[in-house]
Image (cartoon, rainbow, N blue to C red; front, side):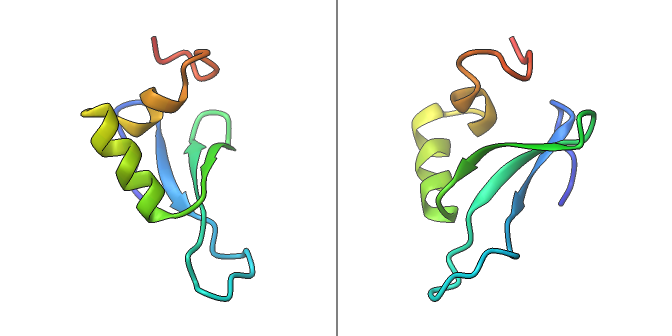
Length: 69
């Protein structure tokens, strides 16, 4: 995991039991030390990335929970 310009990082939730090993992803806020915006798997994350043409976290944080503006 590496931090992004918003003070967080996308992480795989590998502690989940998955038969197909398609782990969910969630956005980890380094400042809050909390997970936000769980995404079903990497394929869904890529779809969001393509649709947003920018940062996935900004696509999901429409209510400004993280205050990304």
